Image 1 (tube, rainbow, N blue to C red):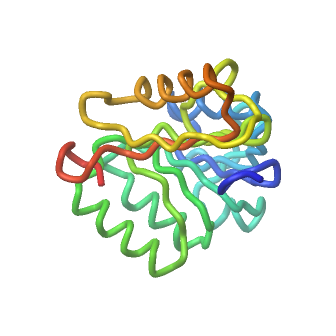
Image 2: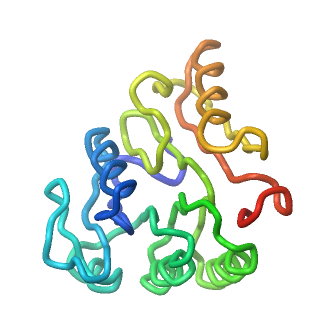
Length: 195
């Protein structure tokens, strides 16, 4: 059993035409993630790695229904981008963006809770269901394997970025494997822009 994402996940990628979004979309797609659409305002009608790009989330989900999303939108635009996903009623969203102001994050989480959208992040490397779906910047080839159980690792300020969660996953695999894994952002108040 997968947690939150699996082979039936239909994924929308916000910020797919940016450097990080394009690179990570390619890796996620190579990992068997079913990416159905990308969104970048002003870039609608194009494709990235064979994935159709739309100007808005609303347009994307009307043409390519999605039940999960990941956002690689820069911090200054992240609040509006995340609220757009929530308004489109996509039930699960990974917010990979670092540096989102705390007040924006509180507003996002409050609105998501009221609308029934689950959010992982912000400032998270994402999660993976081995062999089924990957949302984020988690390493996919060597760290995660199908097995029973899986770690959930809370990153702390001195382990910024992915190394903490990657190391946690590596240690877990060394002790018998990993079926799924998720890493959540730093502790509130310890890192600017992360809750």
